Length: 167
Image (cartoon, rainbow, N blue to C red; front, side):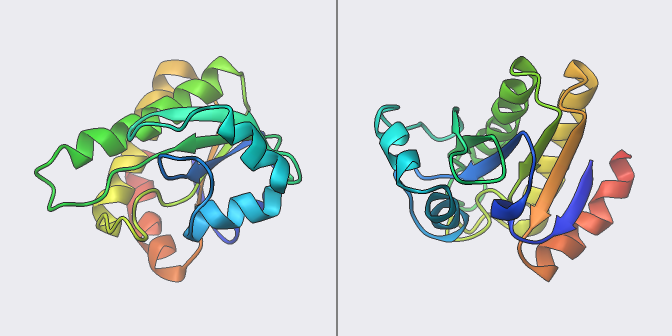
């Protein structure tokens, strides 16, 4: 597991994870950036998937991205922490890691799921992300490389403090 500061749409990996909304048809933040970079073919494929539930994940091609595939997952909106948000976010990471293992991906990159407009506290989300990915790596042995791609310095520094506990 590693952390990078940068734009997830520029990564040449087997798959990137999209912090999507339930429609899968694009939105703001990382979701919008991924849709713009991948091109209109992505929205056409996403229409055929009939959306995605919170905590679930679905796979599409990467189209014009350097990544071959996109795993779309819908994180929870933070409502104070007592409405099942932790388990839903954990399910997002588990399902993405399981898809990567099932498809035998070697490299997988995650954005910071639910920490933008969904307001999940960044430090709590990062701890959960690293914990779940670590557990899934031990269980499945794949993907061989998990990247936490932070778009901003604040998230990068949070992951920088957490990651050494799990490596």
